Image (cartoon, rainbow, N blue to C red; front, side):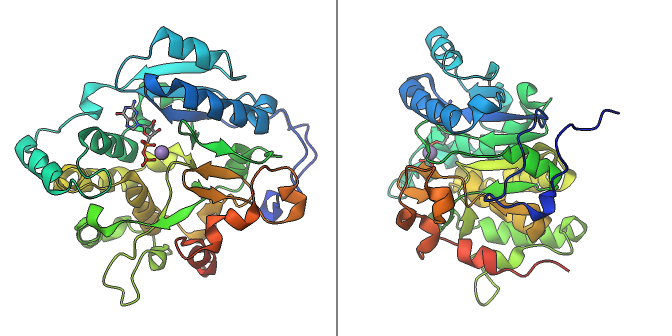
Length: 335
Ligand code: GDP
Ligand code: MN
């Protein structure tokens, strides 16, 4: 087998201030973007930044997904702006709609009762959250890939990315990467923790012996503290999402109805899965990737990094009490 021509670089000692030398080697990875035709202009602004800041040097492919067919204009204007190959997927009906065990009448009543909660009155938002929780990684266009980077229309990438994050995930055997963490609105997830506890009781064999559950538990250990990775940015392993552990958990949640009878977000769902199934060393904070999704920033502070950014490090959410990143960093490494 051909050895990589790159100088041997020790990824276990990776630092963004000492990135690996540029290589022609690529991971089996793609960007994945769930988006509507009407978001074309916000989409193009984001793609322009992502290309300028990273992908023009790497040419990773893009998978665009939509519950409606993409228009020719959307395809033309997105393909024109990126360096990587583009594919456009229609979401199959079974992945965006009501499963047979859900009462649509009860779901409709929920939306009325929750109209004062953020997105509580929205039907499409619930289909979106369920899709991002359980299905995007099973779309036929995604099947060939091992790593994904989730992108949304309108987000900003504020710093040059001086290395290949996908290669880093692969080299260090990482399963999940994030930029921003937050506390969830409890009104959207009244029974998510109870359901997750029940899952753990019924499937103790699936929970990792060295997990990161401490990060999501309230002080008395009896409840969810709301800490989650903000899932509009994710760099992750698709194999992990397709694992027996993750799929069993998703099916368990899906059966319980909370995507429709409450308003469970994909962010707390992914995060609770990380907490149960992954150890700290398998999860990475991309502190150095400048990122903005309204209204929050991740912006690197060291001046050697910030000189290549267009964000103010004082705006970085990890400095505020809304964030759970300090608590994440304080978790002990697993033995
Ligand atoms: P927020 O970040 O929680 O406020 O939610 P967004 O409105 O940004 O939606 C999250 C992601 O799902 C974004 O990538 C949106 O483009 C996408 N999205 C949300 N609703 C729909 C929908 O009904 N259809 C499609 N195709 N994409 C959607
Ligand atoms: Mn968003």
